[in-house]
Length: 194
Image (cartoon, rainbow, N blue to C red; front, side, top):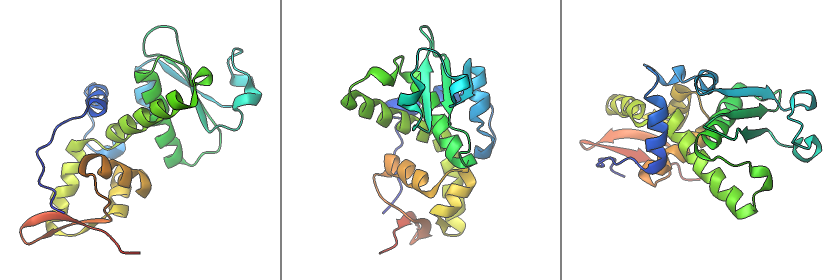
C-alpha cells in the first residue's frame, strides 16, 4: 500500500488537536494525560468505594476499569480508575475517559446500549488522535525511509500498545499494517500473513 495521501483532519482529530495545541510536546512520550486532565480541571480518583461520589451505586460499577462523571458545567468532571492497572493500559483508559469528559456532557450510567457504543467509539477515536498525533507519525514515516519500522517500534515510540497503533493507523489509512518500509521509491506497508 502506498502511503502518499493528502491529509485531511476528521472531526475527532480536530478536537484532539485543539487539546494538544495548549501544550508544547516535543516527543510523543511527553504527552501526559495526568497533566492534561489537571489543566482541564478534571480530577482523577481511584475507583474504590471510599472515593466514589454518593450519587453512584458502587456495586453497579465495581467491575469497571474506569468511569467518568461529568460536572454540570464545562468540560470538567471526575475520572475514576481501578487501582492496579498497568501503566500503558492506564494511559490509554485515561485518554479515553478524558475524551468522554471533553466531548460528551452526559453520564453513561443512564444511557441506552446504542448511545454508549456510539460515545465509546467517539472517545476511542479522539484518544487515538490525542496520543498519536499526525505530526509525530511523520517522524515515524521519515525513519521508515531509512529502515523498516515495525508496529512494535511505533508502539514503543508512542508508549502505547500494538493494538492501539493498529487502530490508529487504520483510522488514517484504512489498512491493517505490521510494518512500514520504503521500496521502489515509495513508502508503503507490510502485513504479516498468518
